[in-house]
Image (cartoon, rainbow, N blue to C red; front, top):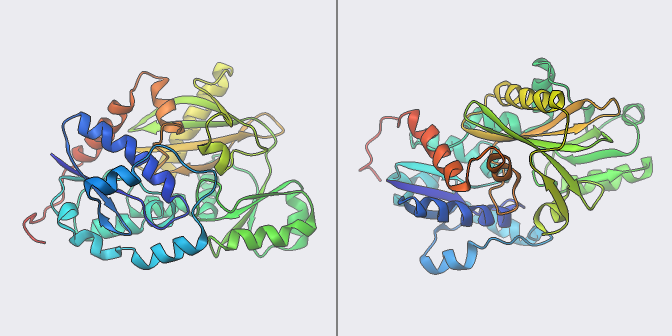
Length: 342
């Protein structure tokens, strides 16, 4: 069976995608699959290019804006489906982040070409990536989530949210462009930083309690994990620098809290119309109740990532995790197409 792994791209999380792809490609090849690796900004990687790009480490900072702007001009877009390695694949496995990968763009290209792929569809991806829309869908489904406004916000609305305050781009992950703001004078600069990555900016209530995450695989919630970062928040550096975060799987919490978050994770997954796998993040409020922060449709798959740890805590190895994701996608059945057409 031939699997095309899509990775890289032009989002600020390009290095994270490569680190995850390194793990996924090794796992799939170890299970006997034929694997092609495709950078959505450059095309199929040669063996030499795989050695250069598929490394398990991630730097402390995302790539520069200038470099990402150059990559964005190279994004294959609809031409991705015309690559023989993608067109002929029995399955596409996206290991991508940011708007191109998680925001539904790649999924839309694959759906238009009737190429089967793992993970959530275009609509589910778009809904989860848009933090404003996702939170509105959480509210509609009765899933607790923190208060928020979309910029521009009135001073009275900002004061209603209170300080400290979270300001972040709406459609970017890995806390890229996110700030913790402690005073009204700092709101403007934080909004400007977020706008470097997205034209829609979300102002969000700061939840002061412990932070947790729950993996979802198929129709099952995996283990609840607690995240204890060195910094005030679980930021880019803490996520991808060894030793800067303590991840506890399974979390040391009462049974009722474990049950509640696992139930809410499945409900959030369903409310957004997701499929195959996701990771849902929570933070406790001042009332010690869990509030849903967001759902990740293509959660990290690096050696430090949370979904693999959530799976391992319930006895699912990384190889089995990748294999199950592929099987869930294949069980939906391949759409009708002529694989000989290029």
